[in-house]
Length: 366
Image (tube, rainbow, N blue to C red; front, side):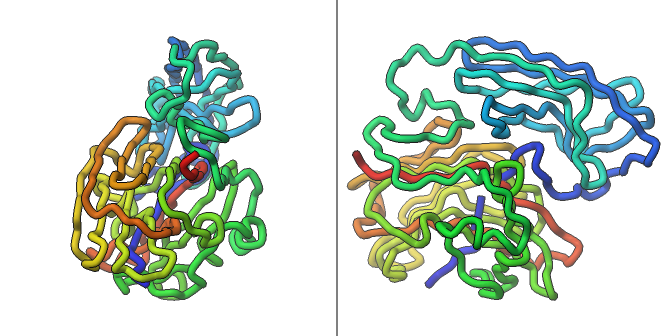
């Protein structure tokens, strides 16, 4: 089986990589914040001013948010940002579903998340005027469920059960993997779910790091290797800019016969923009279609593939970023998320990061 180096995400308030060059706060450093949220339709704009008793660099800082069920719906964070005694202002916007939310300022400093200031609340009472939940009107952060514009959900996982490293397999038996020590596609590293994959704060966390001398990541195989012909596949994710590592979320033949084709989206090194690639059935390794996007792994995104007879459509955050009628497979495929070395060079042992996945789901044609 060809296992292209590949994988998916990261919610703001679940740990990310300890950014290089960050200046940790001293034990005496304290923080305060003044925060607010305004809502227009389905778009919420959050603003916070964070003050530090001593100027400090945060790996991430911004506004954390939770929906009424406690799920993370954080606003996009700022990375490697200086928190000063005079106050550092951060503003971010995002689309949200109708409902009630709580929010607070937060920052990750020296590898530890801190909630800053008081917890406040806001509500979103208006959504798109369309009465049919189509791809373009869905909130980018909400996991689709049930019947959606011609699709019937087959499998979904939003990682609500905490699973420390080493216990993920037992906690999530519907997710398969390759087995610890399996070589990755570049042969510069290996997969090691046992040492690197966990679940916390409502998301899966694939730790990218060198373990026992091998640069390693992890693999998530949806619905325990089950396959189908045609489908809609969506995932919300984020990753740190860990040099030498990358990911590919791919549809791979159930037969493990590459001559049946392959669909990759998103894919790239974590330090590059994401792209999509479709491999030609009957010609292993021949790219039938490839297109780049402006999407960065360091931002939260929802990627969707809609695979139908004769057509594949690719979307990021509900907006179409590619489509092709070339190389469209016609046999059952399984959905695999691979995070490992990117093939460009072997990562330095000091490099590490995290791929965070908020949720993942796929559907069949209704």
